[in-house]
Length: 421
Length: 84
Image (tube, rainbow over all chains, first blue to last red; front, side, top):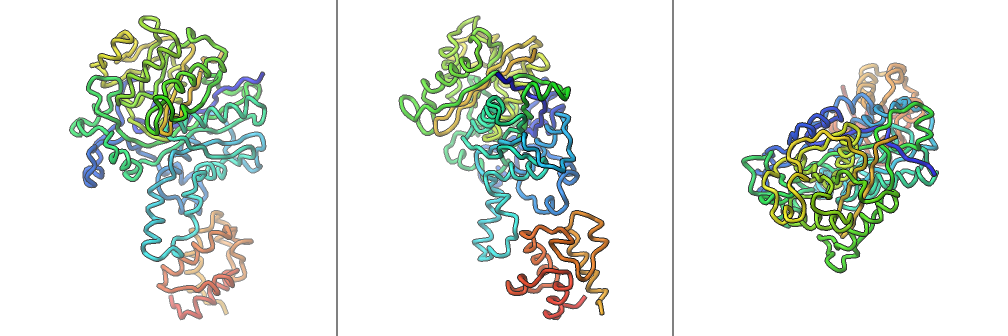
């Protein structure tokens, strides 16, 4: 059977716009959440957000001039930056004159870039759609990020965009893994992006599930698993990984970050406890169990859970689901952490950025801190010991990490990463 | 006879749509926008918008369909009484 390994990483996150900076931030527990004057100006309840700071000169250097001139919004820029970094990190040739028939791309987003949509809507409202120019189709289509990545890297295998709310990023990695595992492709660029924009965030304000209590202390706003969690903090960004068939990677002497042992995705069907906005516990547990089965490991092998954990009431339910699915509790429960404590909820980009953080922890042997969780929620503390939710970095040799995301529509995705040996 | 001033202005406006610097330097009156200057045919409309904005003119769809070379652009501009 083919084995699938990770050979390249790229990230644009609120607390780091490249892998070295991001790695340093998550080791130190550095928050990327900042005051956002635009949110205040537009009467949002939450005035804080995770907005990446990007280096446009990289895009200018790699895209043809005529393409760069037409780039608008942020999601495609984030996607391109993550892809360029992952490609370079994997040691692949950037000068690609020929189509690479054995390399494809699955790269998702939860929604198309609403900053771009705003221009389109304005064009219609100003009665001048014929003066919008030629670029908006490729910018706004859901597969826009894939299309621009293909322009850079000449993919010739499967190229498509996926979308499944907050599971988008982990789902894209799972699908890319499956294509390599099945032999359909030798190498895939995969990941996801989400524009950082008020337009993406406003619907969550409408639901009144954002944290409005921490506007004076942005870095304290995202508080997964804490008693004082006040709701989600929104963000944007992107992450990309190069996945590769082990033999192909070894043949070219590629650096290997980790192996993907398997994963699973499913839906709770919006039945039982499942609704449009809340997961069916049975579906979550089945997804985790199936991922363990597909990865051919025992739940006892899991060293660390990188949870979905959004700083809402759902956190304690998630911990309970992990306990049931892994059949581990008390001191036997693995360590658990939430990257959202540092970067907020990056929506469609959450899964890929969080998977990338999981891979970095595995590769560099550490567990990043859960910042803002000094006051662990009592119902969570009743289930698992305090020390399983570290608030400071732990240096530890890790072997297996499980990463899950759960999304609106009652969708679940879980992946198993293993240190390569 | 080539109107050098207009030609240089057209060249300047086309440049932001052409990726290869040597194609800009070697531009001639009879250079095809798509074949010689390698402008994506779907992006020709962006060239039109650039000219409309620069000169405050409106280029009709009929004119756009006839716009194949640099000289075609110059003729369209002259027909619209554009001066530089």
